[in-house]
Amino acid sequence: MKPPPLDYLRPATVDEAIAALAADEDAKVLAGGQSLVPLLALRLARPSRLVDICDLGLEGVGEGKEGSIRVGAGVRQRHLELDPAIRTAVPLLADAVGQVGYPSTRNRGTLGGSLAHADPVAELPVVAAALGAVAVAAGPSGTREIPCAELSTGWFSTVLDPAELLTEVRFPAVAGPRHGAAWREWAPRAHDFATAGVGVALDLDASGTCTAVHAAACGIGGSPLVLSDALGSVIGFAAGADPTALLRSVATAAREAAAGGEEDQVELVGLLAARAVADALASAGVAA
Image 1 (cartoon, rainbow, N blue to C red):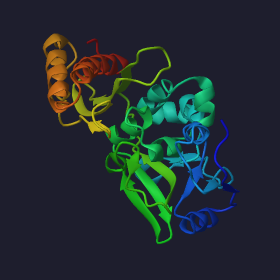
Image 2: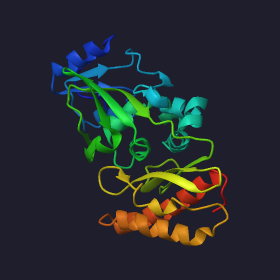
Image 3: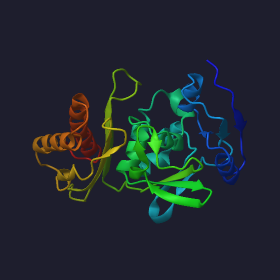
Image 4: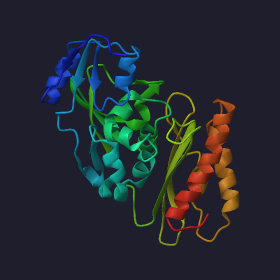
């Protein structure tokens, strides 16, 4: 099906894009188009104007303040998957993005597009929330920083104003010398939308004892479910200890944090959390 009639603009600067969005409350941002174009074709979205942001220079990856990693909102997901700097500094992001659809999907989809679309089972908003990343939004009143854990307000909805545009996301460079990370999800078929998913990143000290854990899940409600506090029992786990009790406690804590969701998804979150913790510990050099 063809999309409904609309105006198409391709501004050359962020300010021009913001002005175009502010001038029409029914305008939509077009980044990779991976989510928006199918909605247009099915007439599930009917914007009066598309504001294409592909020429705004939002594709950079670089070092930010205090060792953070600045990732432009227009960076393609395939780039996140393959960039050595991302894999070194934010391995959970690289691990999770590899589960997003097919390579063709990741070649078109962007980081900012995924966060702004706020699909409740999308991988990238969960990773950003788990790691304490901060999104930068530009609008008519200037720029503001939004913790990614607070960006989504529910199903396909965010705190962004219609005239605001995500320009970059700042990830803490969490990967120390003994860092481990893992993303685990379950979907009915390979490359399908996940029913539930869990991402875990943790750090060990020189003795092999866990000193920090960051985690979040998708599939429970309309927004990422941050599990970092719920999985606090992982902190203090030391190399050589029996992991059985730890993984059982992780599964129980994750299920309790997800209480209120669909029963099968709650069970999946518990199972996936235990697997992700075990795999993250293994990637940090501790058998679990």
